[in-house]
Length: 325
Ligand SMILES: NC(=O)c1ccc[n+]([C@@H]2O[C@H](COP(=O)([O-])OP(=O)(O)OC[C@H]3O[C@@H](n4cnc5c(N)ncnc54)[C@H](OP(=O)(O)O)[C@@H]3O)[C@@H](O)[C@H]2O)c1
Image 1 (cartoon, rainbow, N blue to C red):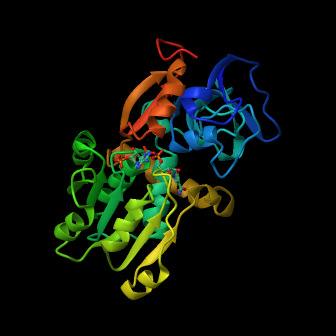
Image 2: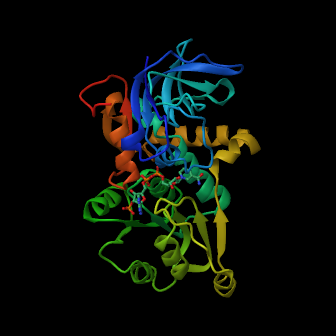
């Protein structure tokens, strides 16, 4: 089969290699999945760089979420078990963690319903306790996890302010349903959020970016607000001043969605049922902005790493005319 290999750590566009390899053999409790669609996530880039919280042995195949088909014909959503990731014709997954792919979504959309939306759901509801009528501020609102958080925030009855980098992304954020959009490249983010909230600030901040985004958030979070620490796409891990949290009465709330798979697997299943129901009504619909053939996976991961994409880029089977290996 064809699979992308990462033989050494580095920038995705430089180190990913499309190879002809043996189809993997699943271990105990695992199943082989024929990949129907593999969604590109920022962590794929971090895995290539060797900067993710797990460092699989080299060489490995990236691709951390797929919609695929089992040998007995089930259409499922899965998080492949590395080193046999989703940017390949076949991947390996834990049998117990497979989820049914929603009928309302095509393969690319189904592949994109999992990590981003589960992270948004656990972040907004379980960790930040977002309430209807509250104001939610989402950084990188036109991105992967950001676009999911915007849709879930709206579905929960919140007023959503999106922060994005650039005019094209601002248009995407508006289209997603943001009530107000701030362009971090052109506007003063803190002033704009205070202005949009009558000086009160945002009740919940969803931050997959870190760095300057975190600093801005702390300056425009409301009394008893919650700052959700989701990721560090900027490359800078903030070092918050706890005296500031004390004097302003806000909470800094960490979120590592992957932990729920072992700490509370029932909650992951419950969340999937809720997301499937929301997808069936159209209240959430993954924004798949690009569909590329398997041959284009390395270029796609690099574009996500560079912050050059909106919504999700999904890799589909077939070698097509994508970037050469
Ligand atoms: N905590 C969890 O459990 C969890 C789960 C899933 C993902 N995550 C994290 O969430 C983050 C986002 O993941 P994603 O797959 O959805 O990616 P993404 O948001 O689609 O892409 C990252 C976005 O971050 C913004 N950004 C700001 N500075 C950047 C920089 N220097 N380089 C690149 N991007 C920059 C860009 O949007 P703008 O230009 O609009 O600012 C870019 O589009 C990642 O850090 C990931 O690790 C965390």
